[in-house]
Length: 379
Ligand SMILES: Nc1ncnc2c1ncn2[C@@H]1O[C@H](COP(=O)(O)OP(=O)(O)OP(=O)(O)O)[C@@H](O)[C@H]1O
Image (cartoon, rainbow, N blue to C red):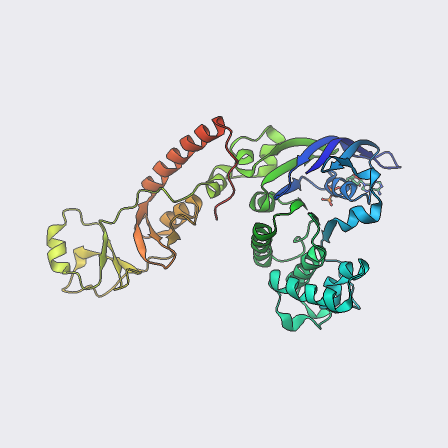
């Protein structure tokens, strides 16, 4: 646990970068510092590894005042990742990653073996080990930066805008990779970004700072979206926060409708005669996977043309935001719910999703009243 207690930083020119900040940063979780440019995020992060000394206040790690520890030992217990990765250009990828173990006196062989293991962990092709940083894409370089920070297995990882310099698609991949690695390693991660969407995606807890280094709100992402503390936080969250909040609600309990789902080989003529309501039906293949929508009112003896069903959502894995999006995009207004193997479990119309949103909100309000853990984004 990192405890920031009433910490302020005034630079020599009089700029107050951080103003009486107090934050409890728990182990095994990602805490995000977010806020507009110049609000003191980087200053706060650098006070944790003593690259910047506070003017007043105390920072403790596991109860111990960090000024009592030798600064080298302190920094070795904290991996540090920065924008553009900050790699050593004249060293190979493998040697970049092995830097800290080598500084700690590991043999070259052991340090390189560890570096190779980390390349795999962060999703880098082992064939890149002997390349130099300039021979890698920006996203690959960021992965090397993360691997290098993890090399000596520090309990704490400090990340300063680590993914800001890459395009949105690569960035999304890096965020997912970080969440996967964190699921395996369970570090105390402090992550700085100026992008609220990124904060909400990666953070277990998000500290919103306002200019002048004052804490505006410190909360779980779903709580930020549903109950911003004031107008500043609300504006910083941006539009459609109601829709974005649906990312935290699971599709697990959606009441799926199977009455409009039929496999190929169904007696369509018989079915068309039976059905009072002539809503389109979803046709599946022999394995139960979706093929498309059929309109039985234009039945001609066999179902010849199917309207594409677009994309389904994975029940229990995707969020209600995804389900609602699929329903809105669906030509019939029905989202197709599938299992992990792609087989159709049933359909959810926009009204069904809306009912699930109301039920999930009620459940969450009850959970919050009982003090349960905050929700993590589903997908
Ligand atoms: N060495 C310094 N001397 C004087 N002022 C500084 C120094 N470093 C930062 N500042 C000022 O302190 C304030 C906070 O800076 P900081 O870099 O912590 O903000 P930030 O939130 O990380 O910003 P950004 O998102 O733009 O990186 C800014 O007004 C900045 O100009």
